Image (cartoon, rainbow, N blue to C red; front, side, top):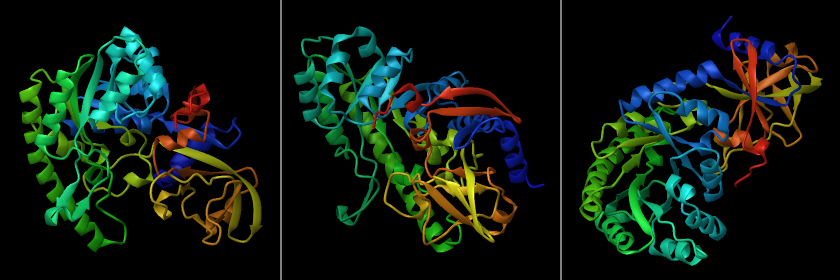
Amino acid sequence: MTARAADRARYDRATAHLDAPLAIVDLDAFDANAADLVRRAAGKPVRVASKSVRCRALLERALAMDGFQGIMSFTLAESLWLARSGFDDVLLAYPSADRSGFAELAADPKLAGAVTVMVDDPAHLDLIDAARDGGREVVRVCLELDTSLKLLGGRVRVGARRSPLHSPTQLAELARSVARRPGFRLVGIMAYEGHIAGVGDAVAGRPLRSRAIRLMQAAARRELAERRAAVVRAVRAVVPDLEFVNGGGTGSVQHTAAEDAVTEIAAGSGLYVPRLFDNYTSFTGRPAALFAQPVVRRPGVGVVTVLGGGYPASGAAGPDRLPVPYLPEGLKYDPQEGPGEVQTPLLGSPADDLLIGDRVWFRHAKAGELCERFEALHLVEGDEVTATVPTYRGEGRTFL
């Protein structure tokens, strides 16, 4: 029996008393992935990206492990909810226009002490001030550095379109604006190198593309390390007591941790290891989060149909954004239908061994987005479900 076949048998036994569709997290794999992130961070704390987890119980599990410290959140409403739930170090990774949320933040000393908000434009400060509604608490602020690699005088750009702040001069200028402004305190810098951390460099069957990606990422790492160090020097000249410099992502943990200017690493997807993180030369994770769909039809030889399953991931549409049939091995989508909202035909010889009511296990393309489809995660240890915990959705929280 292969390792994957053994996992399928375990998952089927563990969830035999449950009806599919359902979602699980294999805690042995989750813990092993967490330990690998800590190992690669080489002594620098790992801040957990909540967007990639979306389950309070599993955020707590990660933060209880040595080497993890703090949460990186994705909306202001989520940040406030987490802070009220007892998480005392929450960095909001994206700018917000949530005026009511900023009014709450500025009026509550506990929230203001626990949550740091992201800005990359003086207009963000104006919006926060206009939203205060009498609240006088000092708002903790982080600046975001644009990590994109710019070539040919800026005519070619590699990387996500995030912050407009690219140079040390630009960040220092905004740092001075924050420092001069009553009601704000600059505490950190964040830089997410998605073109390095979120792009696999070993694409199956594409050796030339993989080599091109590796060359691009090597150049991007060199350029960013030099520029990030200069940015940190420039900002510390304005705010010497800067608390943190956050960088990285699951795919670049060890490279980012090697930079002296970086004080902490952000990662989250590496805990669940969705399919987009299969194609890396720098690390290998264990799939920890899966979902099962029940077989509801057998249309013919070599075909079964499962209920639902059309859970595409965000980003540019393409086959890599689709969940992948994982267990049993050897199933694939019908190219004429793909994964559907209410039913999904699957092709392949393993279909002939599946009966009505059996389940097919899938991996999502991304990590936390799976939790927007399920109210609960069944936590598997060995061949038992040892706990069932709510996702954000299961707690009635759908932030985006």
